[in-house]
Length: 199
Image (cartoon, rainbow, N blue to C red; front, side, top):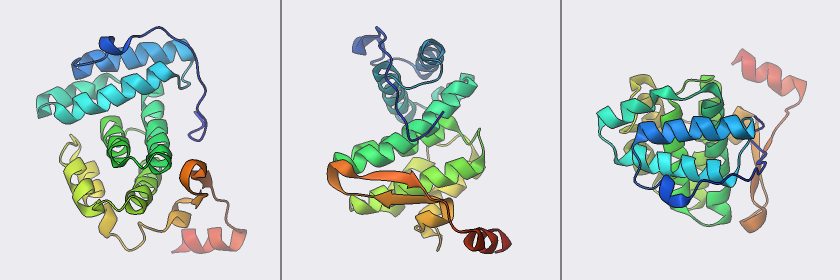
């Protein structure tokens, strides 16, 4: 899935179908919804992911462990949602959406390439700082939800790393402001690529 793109497909899931629903049922709904949209986002997919993040955050460790039934498309969608949340939290001045994006990464559990997780952490950290959030506190609280010790450590310590605030290190740049704010891929010159991989 292109993490910068949101493609809308009409489905028919009502909000009350995903409200106050256990994590495992929301995982099943997400897998089903993505099978209909062929992995693309839709209003229903966004709604289910949002409810899944809320349920995950409110669940016990045993309840969060039930998020393990995610399909490959669902893992992709959760990374996409983290990107969406990083962008839209700034556009809408919504710290809560930034927190939801962090939670989406914890639900995804680092299943995909860890470099993707780090890229999304960098975008969410950048957004949190633009929103004047206490990034250290937010990332530490989010890390406490992780069922993956290695991922929890990465999230908890990420804001403290000297290079974590450098979006270009993750081949991403921020553009615009307000409703025009967005993240875009950054393709550095060959010399910078060489310096980055050599370091």
